[in-house]
Image (cartoon, rainbow, N blue to C red):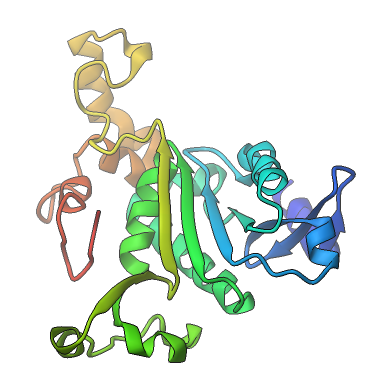
Amino acid sequence: MDWMRRMSITCFQKRTDRNGIKVEVDSGGEVFMDTAVAEARVSPQHLVIMVNGIIGSSADWRYAAEQFVKKLPDKVIVHRSECNYSKLTFDGVDLMGDRLAEEVLAVVRRRPEVRKISFVAHSLGGLVARYAIARLYENLPKLDLSSLSANSLNSEHANSMHCLEQPCESRIAGLEPVNFITFATPHLGSRGNKQLPFLCGLPFLERRASQTAHLIAGRTGKHLFLTDNGNGKPLLLQMTNDSGGLRFM
């Protein structure tokens, strides 16, 4: 079934649904824009990235994306991320975060008119978005923002000395960060008491869950239950502070 979905994306690059929302398949996901605004060649400058949770897909955000565009037709365009879906959500927070970062960069390159960026994420998607944002973060001198190119976003810049001499601004993928919103995201992991309601708070079941989560959810299971400590601190603990050259929030 997956190959059929991929073929449909390739064959139908653009479409407009009956609700007056223009939908474009773009850079591994779908972009939602108001049809009237698009036809008037108005370019919304605020990019909203929506990220699904574990075993989810971009379809989880379809209704919300439509409502965003209807409410703020000339202000936002919404990109529903599709790089991490179904069993790919078992690959681990770091790998999924890397994929999301690349997807965001691809969207930004194709839409040079955008100036601001926000993230809205559900469940595991909140952790993935946090990791991706750390990958995309840059502290740039204000005077250099106009000359920033999307192709330079992956390169290392010697901005630290500039920032000592002149004001700097934080940028995510070269854009001004606005909002970061998560729903039901286990920012502290799922290891604690009563973190998984269906286990009824029973210590025996919770201990077993932490020992076997990786058998079901792969590296993601290890990350969520903080058992990925073979080479140091678990990833979610690393993400509580700046770590490995990345600026986490």
